[in-house]
Image (cartoon, rainbow over all chains, first blue to last red; front, top):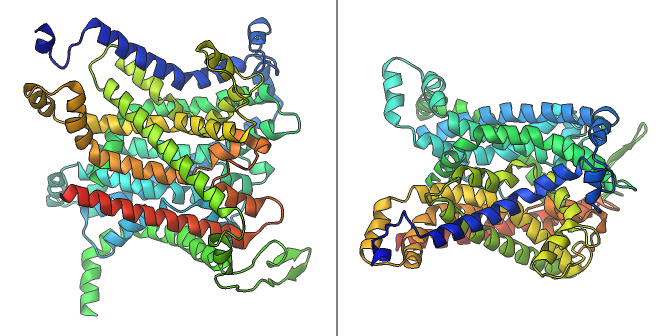
Length: 281
Length: 308
């Protein structure tokens, strides 16, 4: 009888414990590899094989080596430029397109939406060789603008689709009110819709940033050593004749920090932004 | 003409807004795609494409070979396509099934009122915040058969250690584990949002009718999640089918080749040894056709179910 009276939102201590236990184990699985990297980064180069060494020979030497005695700072700067550029270009393109397909019924709208969906399916191997040639012809190979454009084409279709869903949730009556007051469609977009869409834009920015921050296939073929991004550069620690795992772990930790900070800033909006895009498509 | 002008006057705002995207996509996606399609009908490779050696320009000498490459691939004559295809399908189905299953489970748990919810949510989504190549390298250290910490951990619960990064089967299991670890957060986030949009009255009504929690999950939660589920499963399938980083980086030069999916196999055709541009492009086009076919089939079926 008591069990039946218990509402959906309350549960017995046993169920509670099981719930917490499951979530705690899952959280641990999710977090452990990251914490493990952090832990190993304070040890000597053999620490990954005998982790006890970290406690007995703890050091910040790896960080000093990475920051002052490797090409890491250069890679970091390259990646910040490329990822920053991709974010700016990607958010701009995705927002204008998402708004147009959300609010305006124009000839070519449906084919455009379809082409975005299909672009998601393009395996990079069919594009990478032609893109290589195209970039060479345009003089953009091994350059920042070239990489920014390439990454934008990867991220924009998905982001435009997601933002379209987000704009759909903003009442059209607000746009109409704006136009009554004499705003042009561009003005309405810029002054009314964009400020309301900040959560969606934040998620879009995050997605663009991460695309550029973590891409390996294009970067490792299109860029020369001077323009390496972090994703390619860190591979040189791991793939060398004698892999240097201590440097790799320290570099990995430094690389993760900006990504994690951006993530913490936008994660609040993540659920609403994603689902708006997911369900309304 | 008149109509064209009227149409322009009415729609130029919209066209101006989508214009930049259309130009960028046409130049950087459509043109390369057509060029890749063209290459797949030729025998282009490193030896016969146009190149500049010093001041000398050597013109291209490759030829059109019609459907020869496709025949090589689809008849199984190249000896690699079908084994790679089978593994690609196993890999995709395995990864999507595990990520979706675990994702639904965790999302349902997280959706309940519970103390420390924010902490759990942040922890569970963390793998998503880490660039995926970093996650892959972390696992590469952990999974080492001799010294890695993974074997010690599973040893604690009585599972014997494996040389995860060496044997064929072990490598396959390893790449799936890593990809599931990377993929679950996206599922949790998307499904959690879907769960939050289910009206509470539905569950209350189910409870009134005496439905058990399991019955409520099956007949209320899962059907209500369908729109989100079909989207994330479709996206998950496409992304996993094309996943490059996990396969390429986890094993490094240690790979036996048995974990190569179609995409990484095609990549190696182009960038390892004598570059075989035509076969690489053929693999790319075949992958694209498979994904297009799947999406159309999946979209149709999903649509039909919703119409019923």
